[in-house]
Amino acid sequence: MKEFDPAANSASIVSVTDRVRPVAIGAPVTSVHFLGERAAFVGAEENVFLVNGDGAISTTNVQSGGILCASADGARLVTGGDDGKVVALDAAGEVDLVATDPKRRWIDNVALHPEGAVAWSAGKTAFVRAGKNEEKSFDARSTVGGLAFAPKGLRLAIAHYNGVSLWFPNMAAKPDVLDWSGSHLGVTFSPDNKFLVTAMHEPALHGWRLADNRHMRMTGYPGRVRSMSWSAGGKALATSGADAVIMWPFASKDGPMGKEPAMLAPLQARVSAVACHPKQDILAPGTATAPC
Amino acid sequence: MVRMADGAEILVHRNGGAPVAALAWNAKGTLLAFAAEDGEAGLLEL
Image (tube, rainbow over all chains, first blue to last red; front, side, top):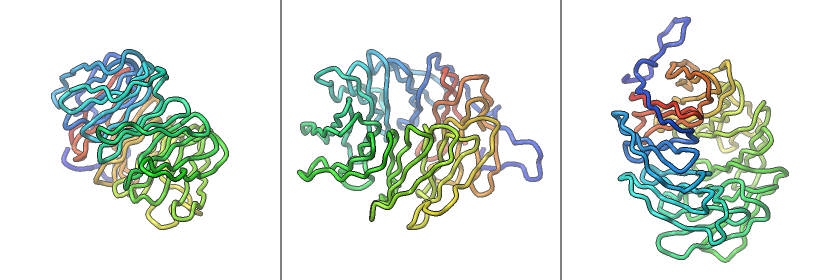
């Protein structure tokens, strides 16, 4: 396939299923990332499966128990597990131990900074390590639900109950807190650093415009939003959680304030995952029964 | 896959049962990887 080319005037959906190289991982998978040209399928327990373009699978052990979280930036994949360890895997398949929680608590969340820093959380505590420096920690007001680095500067968003703390690990100042009632789980900055969005335990997103902390309520989902993906250039945020892909507009300075989301690909099943193409205005949704 | 401009769709994979748990593009946008919760996975080269 050279380009996105659905047939015009066709009643049936074009299929490229015969061009897919099937890969049998043989174990439950929770996420996938690219490390160089290899796809890294993260297993629910112990292993990451690196798969090259020919479909050859190289199994790499990263944790000694369940893998609870993973984050990647193209060069590194960092995972956290119920063995209390934070582990980095590089594109060559080399495994490096980043940290071991002194109390062997579960590592619930990990995040990567584009310039190399790694963040993780165990219980209420978030940790950041930049380079070979000693890690720094911050105790949130409740269990950490999600972590994300801002695209600029060393600033970490820590989602928790009733809001998000924005922490500058290299500054003595107290973190800024963005308040909103409820339990906040996934968290993401817009690529232009102007908006912060959380996926909540209830079926809704909550957003803040960072310039003035204006709230954006993004509701109407029949199910919890477990997958969020920014479109190329950050013009829209694609989300799972409904029987169509819900796309919130972020191209204007007001973001989705006062706007309705676009609904793409009305499907016969609940959308379970979304991934926007990095350059073109194309996205891939996956569903509970039939992705397209 | 779905084109954002008009919602046109292309079917990549019809899975048997388990929900799709994982999706990712490579940085160049030439490869799409996907996996269901049960480990049934695939790669599509564009």
